[in-house]
Amino acid sequence: MTADQLFEQIKIKESFLCIGLDTDLSKIPQHILACDDPIFEFNKAIIDATADHVVAVKPNLAFYEVHGAAGWNSLSKTLKYIRSKYPELFLIADAKRGDITSTAKMYARTFFQTLDCDSITISPYMGKDSVAPFLEYANKWVILLALTSNDSFSDFQMIESTSGKKLFEEVIEKSSKWGNPDNTMYVVGATRAELFSDIRKVAPEHFLLVPGVGEQGGSLKEVAKYGLNSKCGLLVNSSRGIIYADSTERFADAAKQKAMQLQKEMEQILVTAGF
Image (cartoon, rainbow, N blue to C red):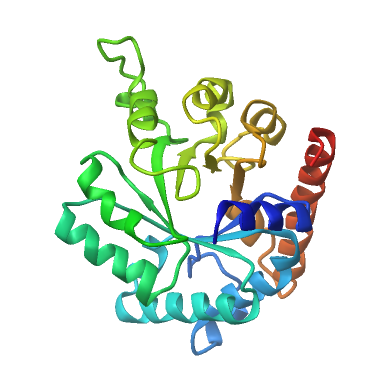
């Protein structure tokens, strides 16, 4: 999927919402556990309920890998289901990989060929050669960790270099030259909205994947205020706030309502911005 195609979906659905499939067997409704593949059945119900209101879906690999081969099977079924029924959705493998070139090539084949994802989250800590293999694939994306929403983000990301720039700024500035706004995004936490202006100075045209709205306290309005660009440039993720909105048999309807609520807020933001 190209940046223009992603932007077109944002305009069609009047939404820049990404839904995170952090599917935890200890949190899904009890009646789903009786299914042969409860993870897939839960994901399928959530996707069907929310597909009209989201432009991207982001399975978090840790919640699948923990179950070994069965978890990988659930993930594969989920991705194939989305591809077959909702081909317009942008698929993000939230894998946070990052390793030497030979290993990176295998990861790229796994997520871009075997699983047919549109994108993958990557730690850029090891530098260009750990990212370059992913950039060899046409219409595929790397989403590099830049400024995260976890409590200890400042341990490294806010360290100032000799040039006076913070580490996250150095990461964005340097890595933006490895790819371009059509194949590179950045993870920027919604709880850091006051720093979005600084990020837009070094990455004005790139899309940003923004976790942390809702459960983690990030403000959608603040993110949009400082983060919007000429093609919207934002994918705002919500996971727990949507998929675990209800634990009864009406869980899918509750997820739909939560997604609709966020989508309506986004619609107003997009209209105000002139999209």
